[in-house]
Image (tube, rainbow, N blue to C red; front, side):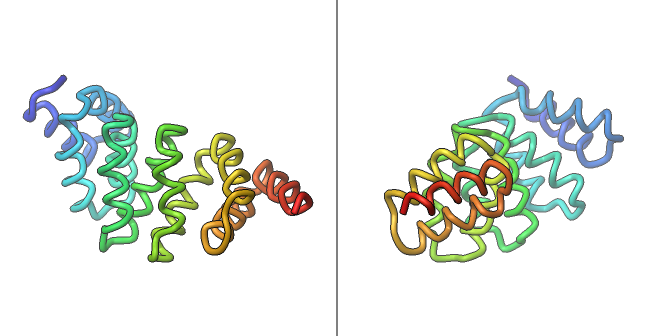
Length: 169
């Protein structure tokens, strides 16, 4: 666990360092755990450089399950689509731990939120494919269409799974 001064130092390195220093800072700040979520989130919200946003979002995502709620919040309420996009990417990188919260967002009334959830599920790969096929089989309406579109956008294994599910209808 790191203290706030150390966490802020890592964040500053993410903002201003070279690629190697940024990568090391991401790993170091993520190792600080839950204590780093709020400062990283604040830095992500105010960041204007997309590279910096990516490193900050990646650090939040590397913290794992304790960061899911924060990333979902950023994805659903951020007024900046770039911040939401990076939050979605970080959720997708988390893997199965973020699967169900993302599936739930396929019902969101905001099309942009649904799109970001689909983006995150697409990044997740195989765990998402299996769950999306089940969703197609068990759902109707918007949720089902979103699951189909997500599989289609995934290409490869997603497209194959979509084709199999359509053939079974």
